[in-house]
Image (cartoon, rainbow over all chains, first blue to last red; front, side, top):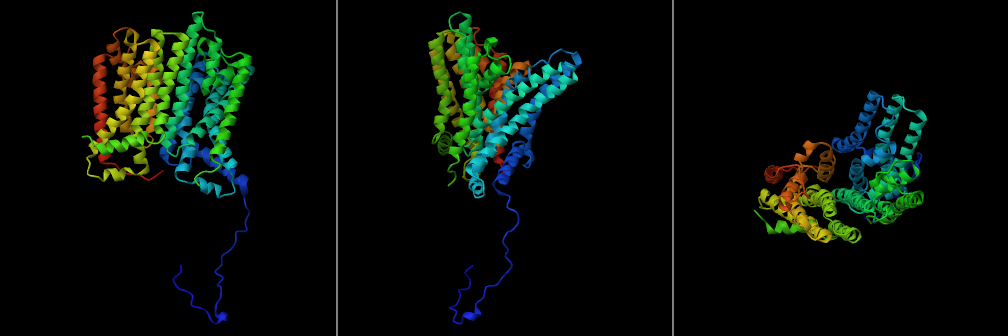
Length: 307
Length: 239
């Protein structure tokens, strides 16, 4: 703007500063917690494509529908045939639909964090009152809530359906509550793993592939090894304890182990034998440890970012 | 039809920096698991067949195929740097063909080779199982790379759609609906493997003739259509 070089002013009385009406902001400052809450709600909406383009609504909504439709069909069958029990346990549902859940995490975790890295908006967030911990907490909580919505909605459908079919109220409520606890753990675990992996790559595509690879390959190898260990123990050589210990190495079998040890679920492990109570404690500790570790890793990742 | 410079660039985009390590982690895991199984359970044809069929062919090959196939062109279209490539006097079908060759090569090296090694570790190629699954992985690599390369030019959510096909369609629907198996790269390649193995360890739901015809048609059509898509590529802004 230095178009006119100010000529050396000899007579000081001619210089003046014009007041052109700039005003300081004196409204309410909404502060750090408000900014964190906004980031949380925006991320949560973004995880279902709300407030984004139509194209990016398609996939999360589709996965949501795919999650709920089998539950609705089961309920319809149970009501029509006057069955005495639901075809699938509340706790089992997420295990059965794990491919859909994995796809959802894989597609939405990079959407949540990779794009901020790629378009270098993270420094802009941190120029606001929020701190590293707020950003990490908001993103983590948003993805975990989105996952909880995805996994709890079909359970709700099952529960309402079960009550409509006049199944036993106490029994169903207990099962429903156990299912909710298990999907809450699952949501936290999956959100943590997905975000940690996604936060290390600014490329969305690569993040998706990395998350899905970690989730499916670990499950694939664990279930293969368990099947082999099961066949061995049937031959009378190995011990069935090996099956439980192998299950520690993939997220979905981890959740399966926790819920079959403490939440009254029947295990999806080969042979149908879940971990015992002692082993179950290890499962719970490892699950909580993984959640805490992914939070810690995220904090470390965002300590200095894009600077 | 083949441009060495494009090939070099694609190769570096796929394997440059730390990406080769990440891609290499999956095959390494397969080999580690096979060593574990061999040590713990000994050599067994059924186990070898289960592991190679369930883990290598059903999970690893499609995932490597998705990463290599979409990674060969997807990121370039995504960040817009493909314009610089398209503005060069290189025919676009040539670009596609070259990228396809690189994607196929990468998929084969990172999936078929470890399958072969794992097969030998598991049961020393008893009943031709290692060779059969290696052939299946090689055949599947070609088809997967072509399909996912096409997806990479069609959509910016190519990785997701590729994974939906590989995991939901082939694994989930394939096990529930018999008809879905006819339209599955995995089953086509298994048909070829069945012919190689000759025994009843490797089975497919699709006949050999159908499988080879479908494999060839899908590969050729996908490559051709990807070339057409690249000819009329419009660069959309970020959503």
